Image 1 (cartoon, helix red, strand yellow):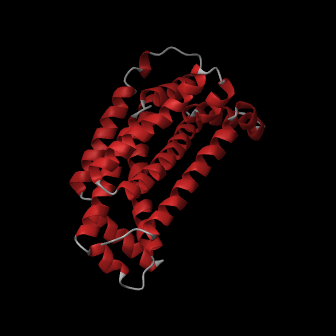
Image 2: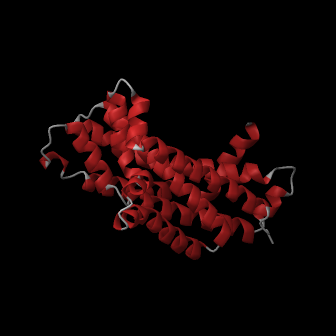
Image 3: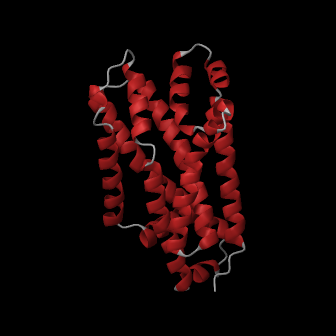
Length: 250
């Protein structure tokens, strides 16, 4: 555990700086608040549903923006560590590659979560939204960021060149976001609902209000969506470990 914590500290010192974090957090915060700017003008019989719809519809591409920016920083950090010989020097000690990669993945994901939580909690204060609605949005964003960042990590390790991984991550996440519209165009409504990650928030909120939450999740298809994206994230992380173990550090 101490070794892993040391790697977290090392990863922070190598990759992140207060100015970089401030720029990433500030950009995401401003964009998110702009997307929520029209929420007060929305008339709805269920204010909490309005918040969820506005938060997700307005923030549809914000996780992509954040993951792509952070994946570029992440990819550049790996490239610099390899070119400078630092990565090879670290692994010359009796240290597993899994520790090095895990520290990078964990810290980068924590940065994503922090940037995500700040504007959501701010929106709760501004709009006085039910905590269950806020929790529904947070769970949805966590799952979305987990799946996106897992895919971005895999692409960064495969491509290695920062600009190439930046473009590849942006294109791949755009495809993921477009899958729902693709199935809708083919009139495959059930598949479109299952792959639509953004609809999870309303399903979670409905489950929180129900006496039979599991039944609500199954009937809405949200449970299948949950399993699909968690499995996708796990597969991407496992493949990332395999790629990193076999990576040539010369």
